Every structure is written in C-alpha cells, then in structure tokens.
View (cartoon, rainbow over the protein chains, first blue to last red):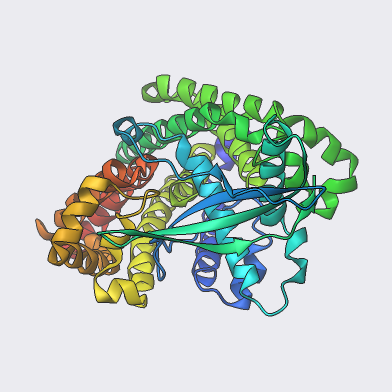
Length: 181
Length: 274
C-alpha cells in the first residue's frame, strides 16, 4: 500500500490530535515549579517541552561574572581573577550574536548553583554538572596559563553586578571549595 | 490546500533563517565544546548512567565530543541552507531535509542541556510540526491541526509569560524593564540611561508588556482592524528585543508563528460569519 494513499486515512488525524493534546498538556503542567513539573522535565531529554516564562516572575536584573583564585603549596592565595565577564553587545549582534550562547550557559549554571546552594542540604553541590563545568573551565584556564605555574589549588566564585543607575554594586554570591589542580 | 502550503512555507522560511543563524552562532563559538572548555561532553555525559557505560554511548561520543559536534552543527546548517533554496519548489527533498534537521536538532538538544532559550524551544516545535505536516502532506486535516498547534503554542507562550510577570514584584512595581535593560547581559547603555532618567517610560513598557502579553490570544477572535494591533505589537516587541537585548533569533522564531496565527484567525472569522 503506497504511503500516499495510507496518509489520507482519518485515524491519523486522531493520532496526531492526541499527540498535540498530550504535548500541550505537558507544556501547561511544566510551567510551574511544582514537583510534577520537575518530574516531567527530568525526562525531557530533547528539550521538546517548552518553558514560556521569559524573565518572569523574577526578571534577570543582574550580571554574573566568573572569577577564580589560586593557592600555592605554601598556602599563598592570589587575588580573584576574571575567568568570564559578560560582554557588552555591539551593533552586529542584532543580526548574529554568538557570544550569547556562552553567556546563556554561564547564566544557566549560575542560576542552578544559586538554587542548589539556597537549600539546607547542599553538600552534594560539588558533584553537580553546573559546579563541575565551572570548575573544569577555570582549572583549564590556569593549566593553560604560564602565569600561575606554581598554583596547586583553585577556587572559583560568581560575582553579581547590579546597575543602580548612578553606580554599580558588586558582590560575591557563590564561592566554591578549594580543589586540587 | 494551497493556502495551507503557503502558510507552511512562510513559517518554514523564517524558521530556517533562524536555524541558520543559530548554527552559525554555534560554529563561531565552537571552542566552548572542546574538552578543555565550558561545555565539554566529558562532564555533560556523566549526567546519565546510560551514557557512562553503554556501547551505544561510545558511538555517540564520536558526535557529541569535540570536534564531532561541529559536524552536527555543520550538517544542520547545510540542510537548512539547502532546504531554504528549494523551499518554493515544494520538492519531495524537503521532507528528507526537514527530517534531517529534526534529528540533528534532537541530537543538539540532548548534547546541550544548557544555554538554550525560548527561541530554540519555539524552533524545535515548528520543525517538529512541519515535519509531521510534510509526512502527511496529502491529509489536509492533519496539516491544519498542525498549524493550529503552532498558533496555540505561540499564543500560550505570550499568555504564560504575561501571567508569570503579573506575579513578579519587580514587574508589578514597574521597574523590571528598566532593570533588565540596565544589565550588560540583556541591556543597552543608551537605553538604560534613558530609562533611568525617565522612570515613567520604564513603567509604561513594563506594565504594557504584562497586559498585552496576557491578552495576546484575543488576536484570534478580534475583528478587523483590532486583531492586527497585536501582530504589529508583537513584531515591534521582538524587533526591539533583537536590537536592544541581542535576542536576534527570538524575532525570527516568533514571527515564524504569525502566519499560523493569521490562518487560525481567518478560519475562525469564516466560522463566526457563517
């Protein structure tokens, strides 16, 4: 039977309708931060269930930058060094904005780290993907840099900057543990 | 049937341009997928027990690790470009190309659980629906319900965003837009200075976005010319976001859904006039 004659069958309408109905129901269910929503989201391996919050209910009103510092075997700590700072956009970003991909990854990992660290029991944070990604990133910056050749341990931090109109405020909102390089 | 083909082609046109820009952006920042960088597969793969030990996982490593992931972005870029070139011809190759784009999109989404935004999510939905429509190209009912679904997801995205804003303190106070546009991430220095000096302007932008987003689905049932106000607002809203906030692909991903909204509006208008 040719596919072209098979597809006219009415039953396919009901199959596709059911698919869209379930898809939309899952979309609605995952818009909240409930346990049901989180249970569904953990099986959304291909990111097909959208989240339509867009800066809501808590808008993104801060910039987050990644810093790191090292410690030598003698215990001497360095100053904090910038590993990643949110870049300022240029006019060409209207058409193509490649830096937003990296920026969004840092934003997502920061958001997840802050969420985990706000919970009472967050000892396991060092084993989470966002923590490991940031640690891996800053560790490789140091390993590939000749400047910190005597560093034996590393610590990363997330700094939050807010524009208050007339001035900026910056504070550390997350500090990792010290890790061997 | 020709109307629905035109609607699908316009949606696909904008979606393909969006995907081409997305893949160019991925390729221009491809170093972040290397083993020493931020989105290394060596760490991302540990989120799944299946990926740690399974033999199939070892084959996936070839594509998901660096530089294999570049091949995936490159393939999807090629499929999108070719599909765009033959779009007007309604060639049967389009089905295979869209199927290829869909599979590659699933691979990209699985490999990169971080760093995606709403425009990627809308493009995912559009490509999936258009693939189903291409598969059932002879079944008008299936194609029409696909267009209705794109319209539904688009309208619900605005309403859900509006409702979520309506329970946020900074949104209700009227300061959200000013503060968002004052950041380096999503802001612009010139616009931020303007809004900080004219707080009333920021409040108008904030409150109007809550209201219009929440009631956006009225676009489907309002008569002429009121319904076109919502589409005009949406066009300018996404254009503003692309220029000021750098959310370039959002413009394409959401404008791509407007032909579906227009189609549904005309269907409902015809039904109401009967």
